[in-house]
Image (cartoon, rainbow, N blue to C red):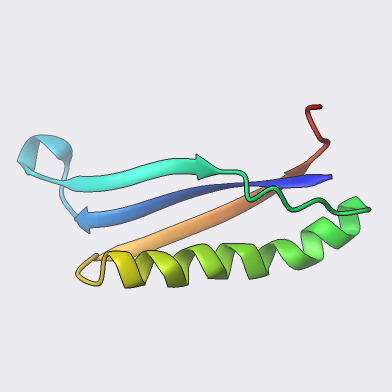
Length: 75
């Protein structure tokens, strides 16, 4: 079981045609969990880590979101 995290760093909160800017992507931290329940319980730590680190890199951001999804390994 692995977690895949989608995140968005909102730099300027406007629509794109009005100059809005954001960085959105996916991240697989490579953390493996033994069960789905363990993944669901611990994914919040990974989400919080991404948000915390993103604020360090982009301190002038307006908002930062991160949401993880647990699923089977694609190996």
